[in-house]
Length: 353
Image 1 (cartoon, one colour):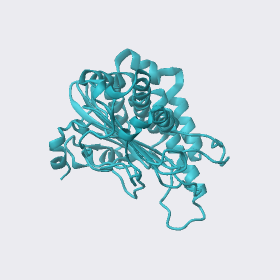
Image 2 (cartoon, helix red, strand yellow):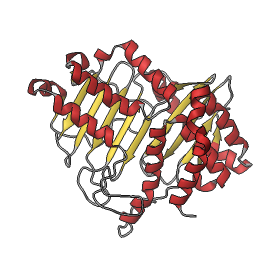
Image 3 (cartoon, helix red, strand yellow):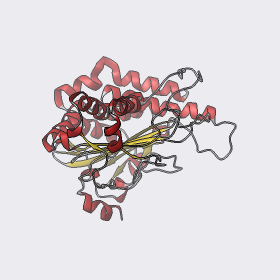
Image 4 (cartoon, rainbow, N blue to C red):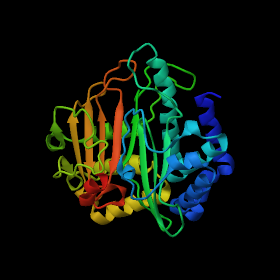
């Protein structure tokens, strides 16, 4: 069975009877994750458990990245049987919204496209839609604390569940290469397809709404950074507020900023998203800043930062895609400026040692 068919099979199993998302409305993502996590571990043999299950305080819990890597923590999908794959996808679908799950599975499937586009190149990383790894830290129980990592090329998801509630959902990184398909490729990869369309389009919509005076404040550099900051590090880089404050935007512009943030919160399950928005609004929406760097048009490197008292979004599109089209390779990440992995930011560095 090829990789694309396996992904479709797992998706069909997870969606059977619409249980993946209707169950969240009944019990919430944290409780469902704990039950699904315990069920997943119960299906594994001893060798698989050694890879998939680690102590909650293991240093690997804060070791994350979305770049191609030969080795990662956890049990990869390739090492699972069909029932285990379905259980793993149930975890993924429970943590994410339907929108987010679609993004995640499309990112995974795009490994097949990258393999095709790069087949004549030498020295390219291994591309495999089944090289996505699942790791559980601690025991997934209803009354304890445990962590979940789902990671592979262009995707890194981290969650902490405490007493049946998701208390941390960061870092959460997604990426797309190509960001937009410039032609028809393999079956299922059609010209114009964009996995992370909203992350880019809504940001340009907000930028385009700014007056010349507002742009002087919002645009912090003509140069585009090469990467999101602190990628792979256990804590985000939190700097002084930069760009234009939400309180300096018009009502319509504030709605565009809210729309942009919602693109990211819509990736996770409804109750995780609701928790994020509750924290954002309690901290003060007007205290959020929007900053832009690089080109102000598609096809050239561009970057933006959205930062508030509780969260940080970074987006960069500067690399060419696998077919050579310029600035068509997106990296974006959601982080908690108070500390990722349910760790106070000052303790994250020591936790990684």
